[in-house]
Length: 401
Image 1 (tube, rainbow, N blue to C red):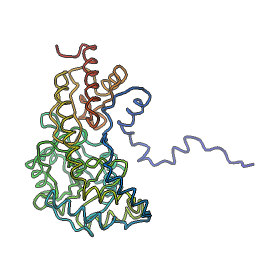
Image 2: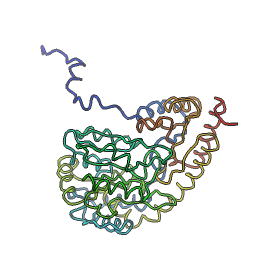
Image 3: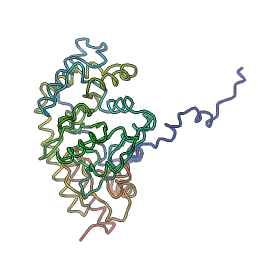
Image 4: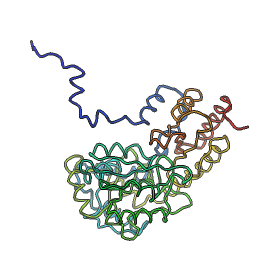
């Protein structure tokens, strides 16, 4: 019989990295844990396309399995996929990348973001981010050993971060500016004038731009500004994107990073020791998406746009002021007039009317007073959810007469 004493919970806790132990859990996950315990909920919370991956793309993945394409690929990804991506980026944004040296295939844009931050950050480096922003930005920066520096944005500026506000937070420790437009959670897009100003700022202070453009194809009535396409910005920009949103391929986990070869070499060092390569069948499906998926993208964007217009119009009518989002599939209405904070509003709406929205505070302190509503669900679901939200406001005497 062993004389070893059982290890206490405290002793086990002490074995966990302090960096991880002090990392706050995702505000989205916390809310969805509550959601999962309630039946018949209409969810406007999950930021995921409700479309199934188009059949011809699924068929390409199935074909790869049938033919036994189940081996590792190059760490960088299949040459055919990198060639198609180079063509795609040139066609849509006029920016040229060498498929062999300047593109890395990743397991979704999430892995791409993690690789980028680990590859560039030294302990204590600062990375400037907008507030509110995608929940992974501050967490990934912290896990890479850096310090996230939030820059407040607001509804007056349609939640677009301004170069003057960024510059006020630049220090000797600043390494990079991380921007994501079209934006999660707000649906904001960046104009060329705003992008140019940030580009000039990055040159002035010799800063790197990390541009998360995962929602680049989901835009409505405006032009997407691809950051590396700006004059003089290709070498100082790391572009992160993928297929999850544009081609309804979230579960396939396929993304990419495009950048100067020096950055790609650094990212590949980490990638080859961790993930090794993105799944082969997923890469085959992505090749098909790039070759023949354009009509699918355009069809989905048209439907998102229809839902977007309906949701924003109804939110404003029921007394939840909402600026017009020009990208992604999110609306970010203000709930300040209700007198409730974001978390209280979202929880009461869920419990009383079974409608799930995400508190704005899940995305940063500047999200207080707002909630995120996703319109990547059917129009009948959106109509019913907004009817319930209207009823919720009327019951609480919060609906303008």
